[in-house]
Each structure stands twice: as C-alpha cells, then as structure tokens.
Image (cartoon, rainbow, N blue to C red; front, side, top):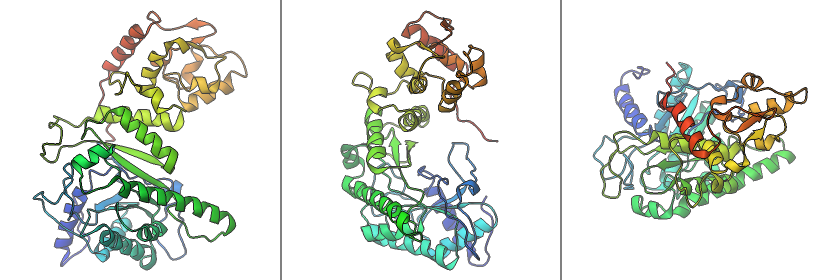
Length: 422
C-alpha cells in the first residue's frame, strides 16, 4: 500500500507512482552497497557503506531503494519488454520536481534508503538522460540529498550526459539484457550492441581517471564511486549458459563491473520470437548462474572450467562447483591437512572463510573430520572430495555417478524454493 504523502493534486502523482514502480520491477540490477558518500553539514541522508540497510522482497529483490522508472513511455518495441511501444498499458511520466519530492518524502518517513532510477526511452536517449540528470541535480544540490542513488544509463545517449550523470550518482548500470548480437537483433532491433558497450567502456575509463586524480587532488569530484553493474535476462533467448558466463567473464575482465545481475525471463508479452510461456520463470537456472558467477568472481574459476564444449548448460541437479569436481574427479580426494588454500577453495562445500580457517587452524595441529564442523564446512558435499588424516568419509564408492546420485538425493530432501524473510 502506498502511503498518502501529499494532498490536493496528489491523486495523479500517486497513480503515476503505482504505474512507474510496477514498470520498474523487472530490472534487478540494483544494489545499495559499496558507496562511501557521507553526509554534509545541513544535508540529509547518508550512503556510507555501513549505514545502508537492506530489505528484501519474497523473490529476493532489494526493496530498500525507491525503485521507479522516470517514464514508461517508450519509443522502442523490444519484444520482451512490458513497456514496449506497441503494448496497451497505462503510461505515465514524472517531472523531475515530482520525483524529487517523492524521494525526499519517502526518505523522511524511513521507507527507503535511496533511489534506483531507470526509464524507458522517452522521445530519444539524450532527451531521457537530460531529464534524469535534472532530477539527480535537484536532489543533490537543491535538496542536499546525500543518500544512495543508482541510475541506469540510457544506451545511445551522448557521453557528455553520461559524464554529468556520473557526477551525481553513486552507481550506474547499462543493461545488456540479451547475451548476443543475434538475440539483440531478434528481440530488440532498435538497440545496437555498440550503444551498450560504448558507455560501459566510457564509465570504466572515467572511474579509473577519477581514482588516479584522487591520489593527486584530494577534492576531486566523485564519479560513480560505487562502480557500475549490468543485467542479463535468462531464458528469453536460446542462448546457452556457456554464452552467458563467457559474456559475464568478459565484462568483469574488461569493464571492471561490480556485479552482473541475472533475471529469470518473465513472459509479459506474446511474440513469435519469444519462447513458449512458462508455468513459472526459470528461477533454478537463474540460481545456478548466480552460483557460477560467484565462482568466477571469488574462487578463481574460469568460465571454460565451469562450462565446456560438452556441457553448454549448467547442471540443474548439483551446483556448479560440484559439477566441476565430478568432471575432474582425478584431482580428488584432497587431504585437508595438506592441500593448499587455492585447492581447498575448489572443494565443494568449502567456502572462502572456511578454507582460511582450515589453513590457520592446521598450523596448530592436524585437523579431524569433526573439527571441520566448527568451520562451517558443508560436510554433506565436502566429505566425498576430502580425506582427513588419510581417511575417506564418503559413504558411497568413489566414482562420479555414485557421488552425483548421493548429492542429488540430499538436495531432493530439501527442494529448491525461494527463501522467505517473513
């Protein structure tokens, strides 16, 4: 329920908010962490990393931000998008002043910690970006708002506008959405691959320049201090998990992205180029890709290790780390008391913190199987890939088929479902 924060002519404004908040729910590329923009004397809000709190919807999306579109009036006709020009849906657009007032009123009532602002392409990319920049400038300068702001850059807009937006925003995202040029041409013919990659490259270069200038000049204006992110839609096209993960790896390596977000395709339109309507979105596939993405970012895995020419899609029955270990069983089991840290990271059921605790603890003496429980090792997976003091604790013969079946049976006792916060 949307609170009545205004009176008089506010009915129209509340209707706009309902329409534009609903239109924004399919964009998951928002995160309210990583910024260090502090409060200033006489200002309101604070995006300092330790001061940002999160709330989560039942489907896992962050709701600590006021997440809206500036407008859902679009000149494009992307087949997968609910806001495409040919859809008969309620349309609305804020003015910069309206959106600023809403943001401040919601913030003062402690409903939000910041703003996630995106938009359909109203008239043209440049026109849309100019309105969004005006909104950010009003918030930062007139209202002296120092809370977290994430803005989604409009592909195809002028680099000068990207520059201006980056001086007011904490994070920017340019959503790729579709993982290949072919898919983009098929479902979003008005968009060009270069229109997406070029601003991502520009943002990265400006962030690097800012970091270099900051070392020389202390008062250098911040440019996107929380970095940039993007979003990929999973399941709207026939693209394999291999293509998605190789693209993510490329983006992390070449554009220094903070996050690549993955969104399970939700059928909101009927179109001959779209897949058949699902009974429910492919949430398990989205979950597996997020797990693989985590391995790319923090565990030293490469995309071609998790996916190869014989396995173009991730295994739905076991997580990506288990799947890799089962395909490389000749490397296991590893001895807990001797294996290097980098090898421990590759053992299913052992995370970064657990591996570090193991390395530190074994300096004081040999570890037993029971000791691993204290380090939060997930033994129902790890036991098939380790030995402790030379003893193997797996309860099945050491071959990939038996181990896979055993791990899958353990998972089937607790079927995959979205965790609930309340």
